[in-house]
Length: 411
Image (cartoon, rainbow, N blue to C red; front, side, top):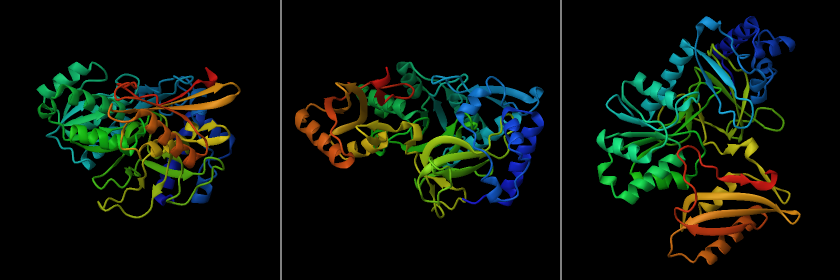
């Protein structure tokens, strides 16, 4: 996707701000001798920024606006290392709320909706992002946060929530609880805005059917505002990305070179107007593709496909490179099993072993099903996993994100 003249001017404005502030990334640009870019070719020579750079800038090395203009910080969880701290100016907060408002609007949500918000609040960008957009839209925010399913369902019924905002894992947990308690007729949900983790088409169908609602994928990451930088429309032909705030590239994750529209690769994002912590050519490690052509909805914003996974999701088993999405796709072909699964990888007796746990109901031949799934994985990917079939509800459900791949080789 070629960069426009306006976007180039916005990039140059951010480069100047970064260098002037002597921020972490400003120093990096100065060292590379880059003070501006005048063409797409020059833009491609800009160095990438990585999560490691952001961690190295801890705590406030990314701060580009003067401190008196910083009104908030958000942070990544830091579960895999030093947390990343992102400062926001008031304009950044306002821009984020406007992008999120658009997301709700694209999903057909209005100021007459009651939006039930279950993602976490605090340093994480999720809950507060969903709330910002809701308030900007003028809808009623119900800021529940995660957990306490009994209370969630009680409020959902009492307040007649019409929109559910959650991770796909928690949406499934709520859907199963509503079904189990037989209270679907007391629930008024019409739509779900789901983000924060990749989810399969089978899981989407499962949640949609159990709750009887339309589902929308929302995209975002803490480093780039948070959730709300893109969403799919009613045609479900990819997520529209707000390119007046962001410039998006898809690159080959190995060579770092851009790939043609339509080809899968790693998402790289440049923030065009962000003040608190602008990022240039930030490697997200999310895998997707730009969908060529115009969307049937008529919106001109570029679209990316559903997130297929992450470059760092790849598992190497018996010399074969495997992504969880490949296993997910195979499991999606078996109608007898639920959308939940778990992959465990171990190193036993000098060799790697993959165990796949799936759920089904008691009327199915567990041994026969396990054999058919193992054969399908073998024919599609090239090695035979151990498949264990369990009753529906045995695999863990989560109020946040569900860990579906557990690599025990390095424990």
